[in-house]
Length: 336
Image (cartoon, rainbow, N blue to C red; front, side, top):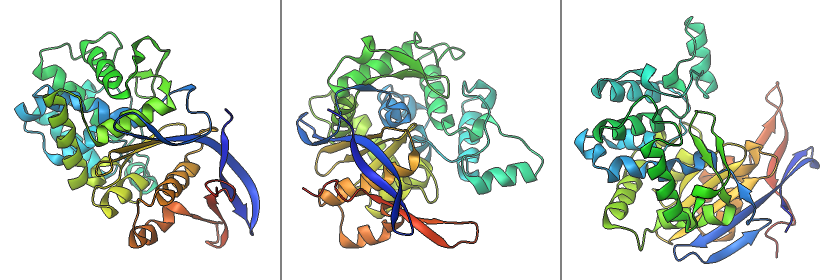
């Protein structure tokens, strides 16, 4: 089944560009509730998997042993923007473990947040590993490896016991054995597994409402829910769709981005999971698509929709700050 036209970019009311994509909504029992486009083809979820990868740091007992707080657990689930709050929290976390940023397998990077990157450069500094958007995930894996007396130097490699455990956890949630699927290498050096988009939606739904899982896994998932709900800015950063959705809905929608146009959302109260992929990988289309799906499902109140309007229908401006167009759901999509 082909991808569907789901997002349009306009200039002066005329469509200038179009984004196709696919999306699926599943319930915690694995049933497909809604589906658009090709949801069966293998795809890379990338960083959309981070909340599920964070399960091991809680389930193993490492979180409790090292007294990880909500901010640190939210960072474990995050693709953060490298703002000062993120950098300082990861640095303090590592210091408490007796480690430092050189133990992180991710490479150095400038903050994804433009203002933060400008401040770093203006101060004469360069990007570091703490700024990398994956540094919280890496700190969580180091925490677990340290607690379980596993090698620290190779924690990011596919044959490391923690990576093997992670693939087991992902397979458990997705309801499909992804261990034999094609594997790539992610931007931070971690393994990058593949799965069908519909399996990613099922995993998001089971993360939203964990059933038929071990009691330890259920407890770990709900602990992560609480952390991300309580500390939404550490799950992404100021002005992001992930943090804004979490904060405005008070944890009713827990979203997570993945590179190349991927976005998932877990809806705990409804036991639903959403997964979407923008075909061309452009990040600008994914918040618009997700907010359109949530609106279509009646998952947002009028006040929530009003406060999220900047993500649902962002305005495009030029260098003079003049509005020249917008990004909107395709008129034909979701109309039926």
